[in-house]
Length: 112
Image: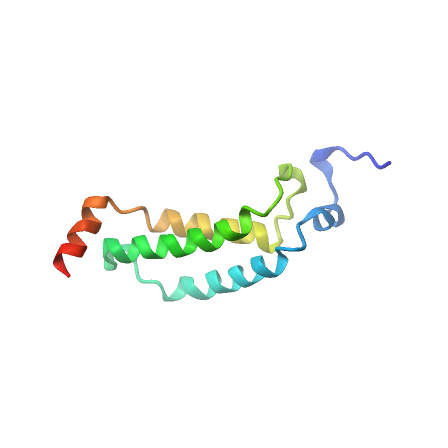
């Protein structure tokens, strides 16, 4: 038996408890998100419906992985790993492109 205080978990242990089954999925999503960010226009240059679609795609791909991810104590999360890096990028994108109001989406549909 090995006992380690949770707030001092070594890096090798964090890597061991990281879910290996989703590792490739996280790496692929991380590559896609990093590649996407430089090409995205500013939020004010996008229509409400474009922002809604972007958010749906980001959240869908993120949830597809995270729902299979076991919950770990914060001290066991590998902050350099692709899962955590994806989490940070997804949070950044969702903050940068806030959820549009339904009325704004309806106006986009009416104008089309």
